[in-house]
Image (tube, rainbow, N blue to C red; front, side, top):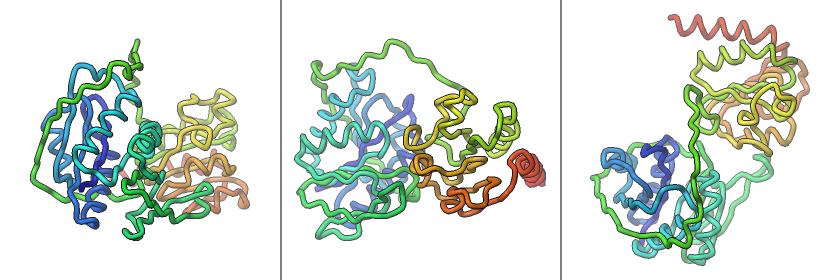
Length: 323
């Protein structure tokens, strides 16, 4: 029996999310007294695969062949299920991102497995197998019991600490050819954006709302983000007005993020917005309305006009960095 964790790679590299998943799977396997196995699909160098052992993977399995040219949920489901059966996996761990959300239900059907999405802690008990997850946009929590023999968990991003637990690097490469009939995804063109931190990957996000009053007032917000090495984001009304790109829209209808630090500047905190950012470890709110809902979700708050507070905050950060 084993705990199998599937890891995406980006241009042959793993990100913090991958190491978070391996750390989590390793601890689950430790509790179950089982082996943790990391699965990588696609071309990844051995030196990169070896990093997975640093975070507790007892074994690393890689699948690499010319047929795999793009992520295709049907083909990937088939390959992951085959590896799960070969390794006797009774727990599968995936990211609770777009890819994980596409794969988990398909694997659930194929493996006749119960599924819990967006878990954020280690299992509360093993018999019965009970996991913890946030519900109602983080306003409540649920303990979910999974009674099937095989269990699938998708881990909420940034909900588990990345823990180094070095193991001997054991690597096995499998030659699994996906069914050609399943490979229906065709990539016609790739456009890469450089010089900008993606909000879904960022540890710090600086976000603005209508309280910024005008797109002309965004310079101090961008400067703060640059100083902190942060990504920039915005609320839906801002993107709808065309002040900022829709790629920066966070919330229930935009990007769901979970950074370590989230600045909500001029954002009132509507339910839809909070649903997308409530998993942030720390929220700092700046708003003129002391009764704005955002202050209920924030750990730190400043009641004031963003146009006056932001420049002072920028100067404070500059002073701190100069020391």
